[in-house]
Length: 132
Image 1 (cartoon, rainbow, N blue to C red):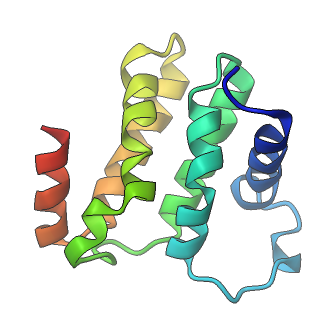
Image 2: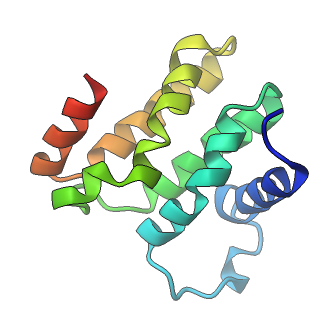
Image 3: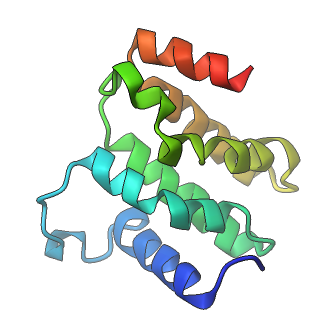
C-alpha cells in the first residue's frame, strides 16, 4: 500500500464517526460540512485507492456521507478547481469503472452524482471541463 497506518487509522476513524454516525453527537459542530469534506479528502483518497475491498468500501461510504450533508448548488465560482475536491475524482472514477463488486460501483456513482450536485451551474461547467 502507498499509505501508512496513520492515514488508514484516521480514515477508518472518520468512517466510523461520520460514515456510520457513531458518537457523531460528541463532535464539536464548529466546522462547515464543506470544510470537513476538504479536510477528509486525503484520507478518503487513500481509502478509495486501497486494494482491500473493506477499506475501499469504507472510503466510498464515508465520501457519500460527507457529500450528502452538503446542500445542492452550495459551492460556486472557483470552488470547482479546489485541488482537494478534484483529488477525489480519479480514485472515485476507478471505483465506479473498475471495481469487481456492483455495490461498490453503484455507491461510487451515487457519490459522483452528489459531488457534481454540490456545485452551482457555473462551477459545474468548470468541473465538467476538468473531467473532459
